[in-house]
View 1 (tube, each protein chain N blue to C red):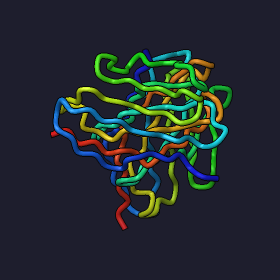
View 2 (cartoon, helix red, strand yellow):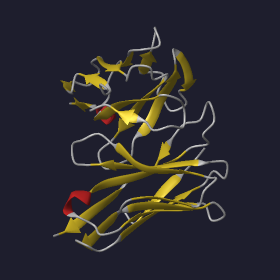
View 3 (cartoon, rainbow over the protein chains, first blue to last red):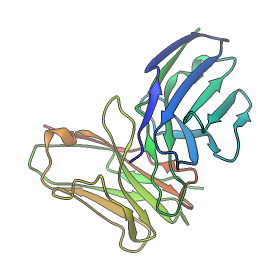
View 4 (cartoon, rainbow over the protein chains, first blue to last red):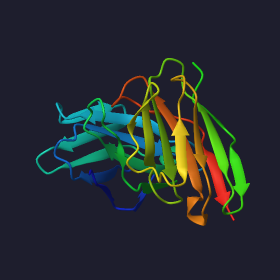
Length: 113
Length: 113
């Protein structure tokens, strides 16, 4: 089955700096890659996703890049703010009718004011 | 639109007891998921329904866990008997179709003592 790994497990940045979180996956048939943000004690919420027919997607301060050859995708957050502090989960699935989403273990991002 | 509803929000039981969780997905969402999230880890899919049929239950410990979605709307997840290692947050999510954004409920925090 699919195996999704995230690196690093924790990341601390200064407010205003950029943060990059990387994920690798094992199933070459995966073609849907979402990123979820989970604040302490709250539910995961989708912040951005990408499908394998594009290499990059951007939404304001957040972008995701995908390298299908290397089987990795990354979340880029620019101009970080304290409210960006949370756990970020990447996930992958094949996207078909019976596909399931496999999540990574999560990365804790801390933005220092 | 109303979000995914779950109850109860918290539950404390002793090992070998039984417990049931309830989920009401967003209206019109055909796909419903139950995840187990152990502290410090990403959500792990237990079971995925498409309408009232099971799409994937490969990671559901079927000797003690069961789930149903009889009318293709609400769902219940049951654990009988509970073990200490079942202590986790149980998240329900729904999506309009597979491989689309999943909307998570607030979760049920289960503590088994």
